[in-house]
Length: 359
Ligand code: PMP
Image 1 (tube, helix red, strand yellow):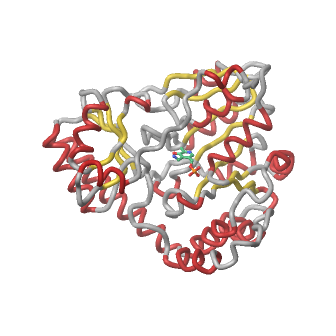
Image 2 (image 1 turned 60 degrees about the horizontal axis):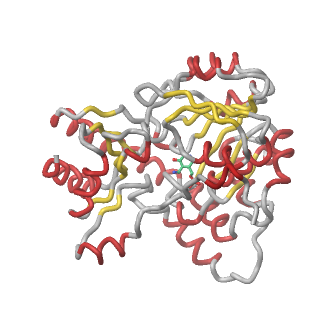
Image 3 (image 1 turned 90 degrees about the vertical axis):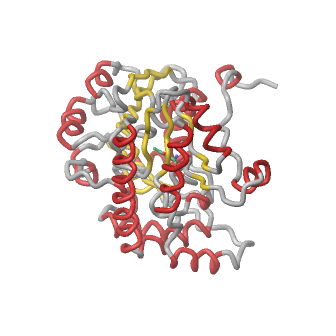
């Protein structure tokens, strides 16, 4: 069978082991998963109820246009309904963007380390990847601008960045947007925006009005607690969104996901509490790092990149044996670091106790 040659050397995405399997293998009663930046407080109650109600009619296809969810998001963000493109997670919106815009004669610019799926999908489409090293986890916007040429189609800006948690402020981002050619799309991936507390984080919804080549990516997987249901979306100019829509698979967001996301949006206090709690717990984590003499990247997210000075895989394995699942920095571009999701108070205490034992 002919498979595109660029796909042959690629490694598929390998998710971590399910918690139940880890418990069985290691004979542990309690395992804390602090690896995928999920919401440790779960999902809003209304969303859970909506899931039960929606699951009652599995024989019916979902609304391919996601009309109810579309209306709810448009109202929440004060954007037009036709400015939204929904996907099975923002992962699928990334895939759709690459499918629609990239090919063998094109290139795409991104920071490295950053979120893996920009490169993954761009490689599949045969595009040239221009990776600009992030310094201390921060995008080097100047160098990214210099990498643009007439074949550049998309620049990926992950703000805050995953896996570092660092962010780009309004002034730097506006200066950057001013200098990107109009025919190059700037994708601002805002998967963790609900956790941001920095006052100078860019007002990207406002900037969207001024820059037709800006597209924002958001998700219900993180603060909204709906990772398992797979729902995310792009926000852009109507014309751009409408021209991307043909690449969207029919019925790509399930009915359960649509209803749950619509209900989750109504619970503003849930998100506010999660943000507050995360901020408090993040501060305790950074104070712990400082106490232990461990370097870390200041984070605007629900995860923290900690430089342990020891191979990330060693720390990962030792922590795993004691029932704490984190991410080794090795696969994330930081060989001597780990990335930990900020969990509940209990999880974070267990993490700190175990890390002090391991290091
Ligand atoms: N962007 C970033 C920066 C992420 O960290 C993630 C999740 N790991 C995604 C996008 C994809 O999220 P989802 O597909 O669950 O919406």
